[in-house]
Image (cartoon, rainbow, N blue to C red; front, top):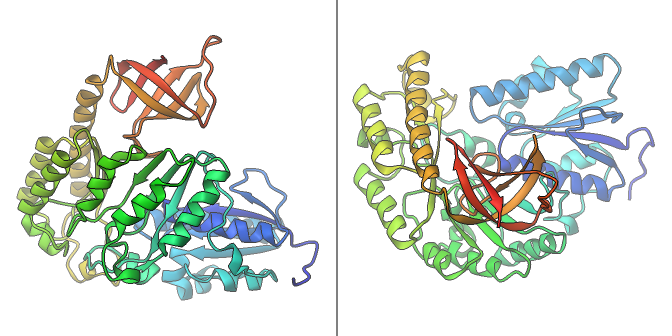
Length: 437
């Protein structure tokens, strides 16, 4: 192993963006720890003399947050509080030349697949035998579990392929090994992520293998919940639903970003699916997995979106009654197909349309939550906060979905990271309140 200066052994890693970035930071931290670095994650007060920022470059707001964070630590470096500042991740992959010119205080910029080069710059060894090992930044009982990298989809608005490259599967045997390792460390919930879960297997095996992967992961002792996020609707592998029905530890939950529903917008967005097929898909999923919680994500204000397109989307949300829903305003991203179109929906109209959808969803969520009052659910508890033990049902992913709150009284004992049965006695728009059974 290379010999490093004793001055360069404390690193603070800052993570911005999505759960895929979280996994990347955790892998980076695992490599650093194996090289005897003292490493922290987003420490508010830190004596680290090296900061590594893992950036997001997805949409305007995320890019601005990444730039602001880089500038903050660049100022700290100029003030003598840092010895080295490095930037990695999606923003760095996409705008490396511009960033180097605009923020030269950063010692080096690295792309999304340049972890070995980053380790070399730190005078540390990149250990291939550690691939898949990581230091969790989440509570130990759940972990984001990336099954593939990159994306082959041609969506007009999305810059992910520019930053992450083509779809590359991780082999099933490697994923099972990693799941076993996590289970031994106390992880009970795997949250399967990728740019597109449903494409899994086509690159490595020549056919869709998501169902097979689910079965193998389901067999891992100690994994009580497996949750699927980011499923692409076109050519959805229905056999994955059969496994969901077969296996009790696969959550009846599916995050499937639909983005829109009007035929005009779906064609413009290059989504490879029609309004009719979208509606049929949602209906089929609900028929084949009764009680499944469906989460979706939408875009308001894509180039060419008319008032009629928006009304179609609004009516679809009203009729479909998704269990969980989020919506973004369109961001005009350079080098995407949509960038060649005029960004013709005013910002205030985009925001108004997004607000209308979320107000509608708030009412739907309230209605669905009220129907849960009086029922008992298995809840996994994540944390204690503001006088409550806070957990989730199998129908909720961390950070983005509803939560279950149990008053933390002197007579109530909850072990964080454990499951308990909770009877719901009260509901609000996006939370449930209950007591232990």
